[in-house]
Amino acid sequence: MSGIDRDIILDLRHIAKHLPNTTQVQRLLRRGRSAHVFNDEATMDRIAQAIIETGEYTGIIRGYERYGLFFTEPIEGRLSASDFH
View 1 (cartoon, rainbow, N blue to C red):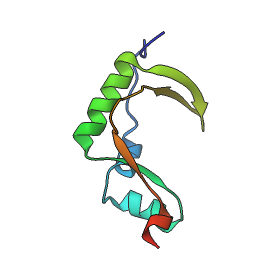
View 2: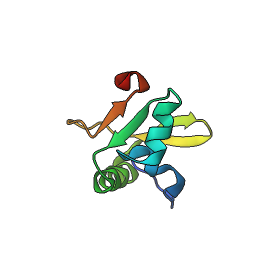
View 3: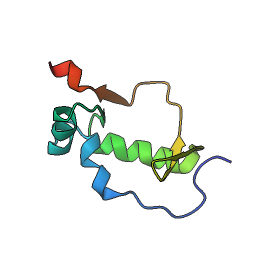
View 4: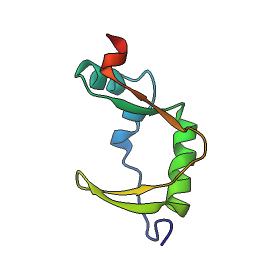
């Protein structure tokens, strides 16, 4: 089955940790963790909508159902605390 066939909501608590130059991303990096960030919120919204429409279920991670979708071009970047030391 492709896509998500039920109503879902985007958990707004997690948006800022996926956008560059936010306090939440800086906090993750200070704690030695990595952050997966999109170029901007509009890109993140488009990707979320595409996953809702055509994504594939990939399992449950940390209590959340996960869906994924393959893109031919990079849609995000990964920042690591080691990149800044």
